[in-house]
Image (cartoon, rainbow, N blue to C red; front, side, top):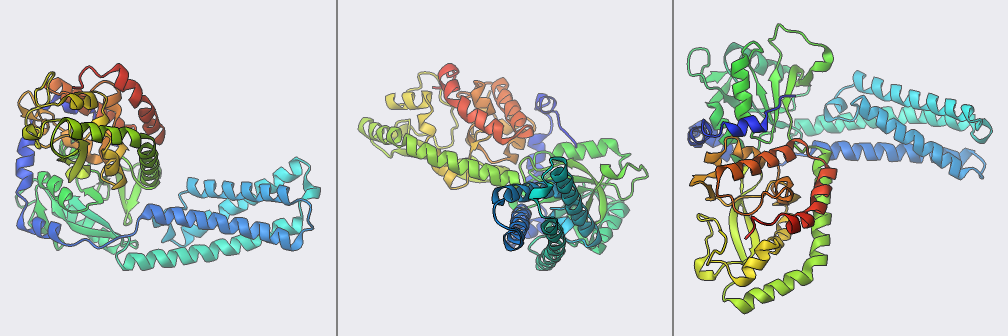
Length: 507
């Protein structure tokens, strides 16, 4: 897995990003036309896999206990239920270890059924051995165990055939296709495109190519796929239209070119794969994953994907609703205090960059005088700033002014935990943040948050120097690379502590 060292990337902050962004904004006509097309709704692979797992486990459990209820005398219901649940749990774990619960696996026949039946057989054998090892043979009917194994095997085959039919049907309808771009051109890219189109999965929607070369080695069209621009253009393209997968078609021997491509692309919330279809170097099978039948090396994954997105969504909604209920008296008192002290609205609305650099509207309690509001944050608030009201100083110091962003969380624009969204015109040492720190937009690979790793370490409030914004970005990138629900929970619990202990920069 490719990793960019955040400290190294941030240290070299003055080199390429402003030039790259300026170039990226000038999309070619072909790229702009594709980006403007309406995107058809697709089904979430994570949800499909999750529902498939749950239904399979539930059906196996009902089948096992139902056979017991029909053929086994009563009196051992609790023991049978324990055996059934244990066997079903073990089956689910085994299928996941063998990657039998993946959309790509659902499309296959021989490979899928072989794994499923092998796991089911092993679970029944282990269960049988355990029953006799613990001398519980008199408590378990051999007829029941054999009946459950045979009926379970038949069910798994029929169930997997149904899953395969549905997945292939949804793929044909375009509901499971991953929007894909290719970086690179020439003969290697042509072979890659043909292999993808001829693959059995056919789950990739190829949008176009991006390549920094403009010569005979990289024509304007490869295998009927148009070149949409340079790699820098891809960064802007992916912010205008959904891109799920980037395949880099370059030889492994071109180490400098590959590294340069990956260093530019790591700011995007996409899966990045390096194609190995033309490589003379051969690795073990475990080193490869496959995209449409093409062997690839995994360079980078979306920071939070699949079921982790679902877990984080549930975490956000639970924390936001709980916080709104508990803190509603504080918010009500704050609103009244703001109205009593100065004329104007209670809330202040500001545009900021959200996930994948998209614009979102952030809600805050108004902390400044109405006639001195700075919607663009062209001038950062400093200590003793005359624009800030008395109530404003208190709510900024305690971060009460951020509480309305709980509504942004419920709307899905923010997470409870994530990199803080910054104002569009915010500057450090008279430089816009993205000009001051190379790789700044990599913090937008995940949804921004109300609090984060940087905030609980004291990097909140004024960012008047480049070092301060670099420290923030450095902490944000650490959070993205090391995300887990436990880390989110830790940050939520530590936020009140940090507000008391580390608030010297907040005013």
